[in-house]
Image 1 (cartoon, rainbow, N blue to C red):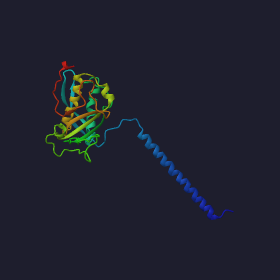
Image 2: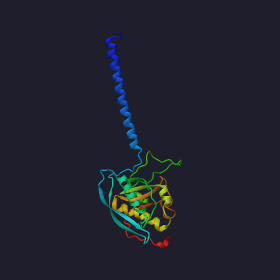
Image 3: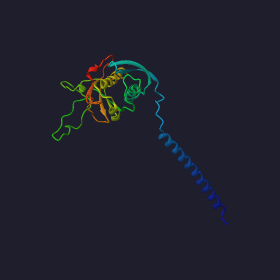
Image 4: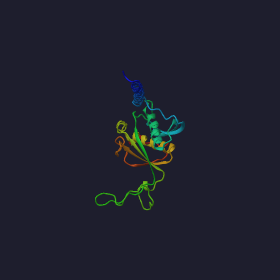
Amino acid sequence: MIPRYQRILFAVLLLACIGMGIVLWNHQRHNYSLRDEATTDAPIEAPSYAAAESVTLALANDSDGSITPTTRDIALPSTPAVRVRALLEHLLAEYTSRKSPHPLGGGVAVEDVYLIDLPLSAPAPRNADGSFAGSSLPTRAADTTGITDPLTRATGQLAVINLRSAWCDAHPSGITVETLTIDSILGTLHAAIPQVTEVRFLVDGQPRSTLAGNVELDRTYDVVDTSNVVTPAQHE
């Protein structure tokens, strides 16, 4: 006959095993639920804390080569670089409509945006083997006297806009249409993000010579008011 204390011990161990099984089952079901939510194909909604605000977009028109300031109510995040990216996505989404006066292809255009405080420092001197002389390369200029690089004398911020190659490859080719896209971006930044004073473009993280075969993309652009700028059609 099994002693009474052994029966009690067996019952306690059995109940403990059942309890552990229930806990593990609930934990695994919760993990599957989180995985399903993470892999959903539903579009990501704008952050709930981002209230709509009036923003001026510099919209392009191919028919007369003009840039027109237009107000839109847009919910933008507060983080500066993310705010710039969201603003540009809203701007370029305006051109995906078939009725747009400046029709462009759809899809995500802007991969990343990086903001860099200006002025930049001059490049450090290099050794014969190509390495930088000194222990480190400064990022801000302490004394820019006599330096000719515009970014070493500019103030504000430099926005490095990393575009997707698929969007650039699908962009219509032509001096007028390419110039209008660049002017639209610059004018919108000037109106909505005044701290951004200079822009450089990358494509898939690399420099690219032109947007779609005509307008230079591997240069620094001043962020200025481009409204009412007319691009002559005869330059096509």
